Length: 427
Ligand SMILES: *[C@@H]1O[C@H](CO)[C@@H](O)[C@H](O)[C@H]1NC(C)=O
Ligand SMILES: *[C@@H]1O[C@H](CO)[C@@H](O)[C@H](O)[C@H]1NC(C)=O
Ligand SMILES: *[C@@H]1O[C@H](CO)[C@@H](O)[C@H](O)[C@H]1NC(C)=O
Ligand SMILES: *[C@@H]1O[C@H](CO)[C@@H](O)[C@H](O)[C@H]1NC(C)=O
Ligand SMILES: *[C@@H]1O[C@H](CO)[C@@H](O)[C@H](O)[C@H]1NC(C)=O
Image 1 (spheres, rainbow, N blue to C red):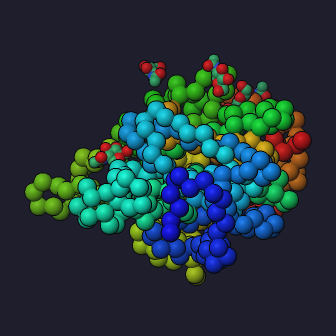
Image 2: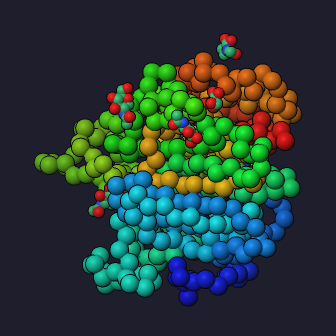
């Protein structure tokens, strides 16, 4: 029995399922229907066992806000998967354009949120409606579908833009790890916004360092600004470093032609000269990742390729990274895609955020190197740099086009690599 979205009782996942979850978390050769996970989360996951519970959290569990907002023009059906800790008590629901839903999860929650599109469920939400021509069987949504049910358990079908969280990561579970992942493809724009907790030190973290966005759909990008610092999608109090080059015309065709879920047909002979003869693509143009399409070891960095020196980013990963510099684009992309801040605050996931894709991690690459070489200590210089508009403008010239798949240039262990917003970990 699948839980429905009205299930209020706490569900404890059976041990077998937990084993399966662990398997998925570690298994990079996942089938097209299973999500991959940022391997950094797995390596750094809090060793304390955290059984996955359905939720919502009870008082004694503590609770962290998880708000899901739909800024898209169409209805979205968010899906929520819980890998560890106590989930929100729902695995998905319908969210109309302009609506927001406030949920809570436990402080040790690990899970993911994604958007499903073009769904049509039966009244009970237990399967697809009869409208899709297959009599209630099969997928209910065109992207992100999870076995046709409204309330997902763990995963949905690729391609999806994914928001991933481990609220109790790092040593002792005191840090929140999060990312926007395009490893399983891209369907709709997504942004993550930090909701500071009650602690004053958390409230001091500038939102411009914590809030990544990925916009890879034509029509959603604000105009680029030459400086990369604004692009009229933020406000003067908190200038955010943005990706500075993409235009709506460019994001209309970033997806490598054969990875489009629905390749437009060309009138006439149907033969496509490389790359695609400038055929008009649909605005809503979900894109599979190379890994989710081919499942090959070289695309998924598995087997003989399970090593950062042997698995360099493919065309999909480079294209995705150019459009969304802060997103995680392939298995060894940790250093430019995992955000880390002290635990305690909550999160809003916005589908179709306004503005532009952010370029936060690349902008502060040097500062991060200095940070990891200094053993994670935050110097006055790093702090000053974080407030330096000149550096943000410089960062905008490089975002998304730096060489990737290079050996670790940050020095030290992978752990030190990803100390991202770690100056905020001072307290
Ligand atoms: C499918 O969903 C997308 C994203 O919400 C939307 O842009 C598109 O118009 C939908 N297509 C159909 C056929 O409803
Ligand atoms: C962004 O700025 C441009 C010019 O600076 C302006 O024409 C446009 O209306 C602005 N867009 C939004 C959404 O504010
Ligand atoms: C800018 O954004 C911050 C954070 O969302 C908000 O508190 C502030 O009022 C905004 N400032 C302006 C001038 O809109
Ligand atoms: C973040 O906001 C602070 C406070 O407004 C500002 O001084 C700083 O330059 C901003 N940093 C970035 C990376 O945008
Ligand atoms: C900002 O950074 C630039 C380039 O590193 C540097 O020349 C400048 O002095 C810095 N400005 C401040 C106010 O620190």
